[in-house]
Length: 385
Ligand SMILES: NC(=O)c1ccc[n+]([C@@H]2O[C@H](COP(=O)([O-])OP(=O)(O)OC[C@H]3O[C@@H](n4cnc5c(N)ncnc54)[C@H](OP(=O)(O)O)[C@@H]3O)[C@@H](O)[C@H]2O)c1
Image (tube, rainbow, N blue to C red):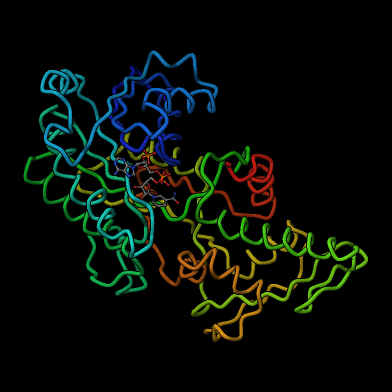
């Protein structure tokens, strides 16, 4: 992208998957980034960001970054008044990427606190720092499930797949209301499911798509080891066997509610499209970062079989009684249950706003080559452990 001068961006969520990739791209093109985040139990925020800079090979850019450890549930973001005031003078566009990304109902209270309650403080900071823009990174699934067609428009649904979608929807409404009240221009950016870099295969978080493949990878390991431990037998229980070509056959039915798609975009597309949106943003506009060529669960199953050298995955439409599960099926379900609804999505997404802001940039097709590149990397780094 052609740029005349560097800008300052205030970024939350920089220690996460998407935020770290955005941070890296902003730094690479010469911008300054003020990171509002938190330390971990073991490390300060500064140390965490240094590690990320090393991962992106951007140590030389550390001078373009300033970090501030904040708590978005506390007044003045948990900072002392002088520090807060000083940060307010470094005004820039705000990209709010931090989020509780867990799907489970069990974390409802934390999800609401992180995704909804914290917006008051960050938008107050935007107002006090005269931020020219507030960009909210939401999800393509915030529109919920009342209608299968999702326009690039405010949420009109009160039915959701999980607490994550629900809190992201509430957050969008809160962002729109608060920013409008402060006359602060805002955008809502809604990515679908994001995987690693389609060109290099690299990623620094291995959730969502990776969870399915990782689960199958470990199930395969378990049964290969099992056959090996039984004197190198080629056959075991539950119809599991290794054929003469080395392929492991594991009868494994995966039940999904109905026919549908999995909508995936790579992180390099997320970053390029988001940077274009930041450059051509229109106030109050919603942008879908989604694929127009989503794959089916059968495509994904065949990718997994080829990559892992296994056979036997069968997609079942409907449900399977828990009592009928064989052990690999029970294991798989336990690993991936929260993600299963996204394997057979029927929701489709308008993209006119995004197409206009990005000159029609679209994500690359999720081919087997792209899949294998990303999974090769994930295996090489032991799924980020
Ligand atoms: N990844 C996807 O496929 C995807 C798809 C659609 C939308 N999105 C959206 O994109 C954004 C980034 O997602 P991601 O995949 O990068 O998530 P992620 O890897 O889970 O990172 C989440 C980020 O939010 C921060 N965060 C979480 N809880 C927090 C809290 N209570 N206080 C302060 N910071 C907190 C995390 O900080 P710590 O590192 O300190 O925990 C981390 O920086 C989110 O808004 C998400 O809803 C993601």
